[in-house]
Amino acid sequence: MIKILSSLSKTIHFSFALTILLFLVLFFFNGGFVFDTLFWSSICRFLHVSVAIMWIGLLWYFNFIQIPNMSQIPDEQKPAISKVIAPAALFYFRWAALLTILSGSILALLNGYLYDAMTLSISSGIPKHTVIGIGMWLGVIMAFNVWFIIWPNQKRALGIVECEQEIKTKSARIAMLTSRTNTLLSIPMLFTMVIAQNLY
Image (cartoon, rainbow, N blue to C red; front, side, top):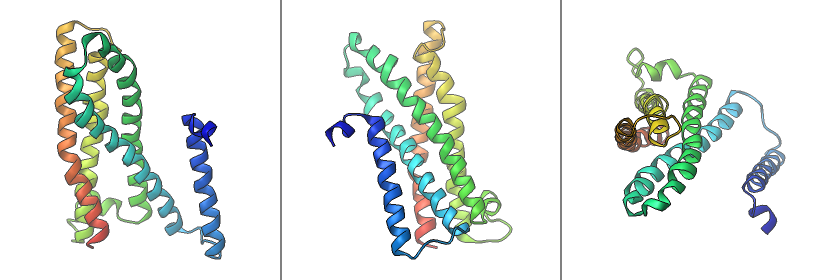
């Protein structure tokens, strides 16, 4: 077991194997599953929640841990963050954001409320679709911020793209403020997603 846990890739592979085993056990004791829309919706919801945890978890890591503590790190140690940790975290951060929106849209499509939620249920007046639609739009805005504001500015701030120091400093500020905006939006976004599933 130590050999598995010493390697991240082996840990993740083992986790997936355990998940598949659990699925097969549940399949057996349930007398099988009907591979219908409800089944695929459940699989999609699992994927949606998984990548959303990765996305929001990293967003909160940046805002609750990395950014507030950067000033306490000695200058000679800062490259460990800016050259190694931050680029790796941003890779998972931006792709988790995209996959969250994609899986959430597929989930809404499978459940038949994608259009109604994205129009905030103005025509049909279904409260659940209005609430989840608000959450979806907040998620779309946040994902847009990740890909079109945070990531381009972080590339300059971290030196992935060469630029003058003045532009680098300005880009770091823009990326931080946009990330902070996403943090502001993340709590109401999560609130609407949860409340739509539990109060309606």
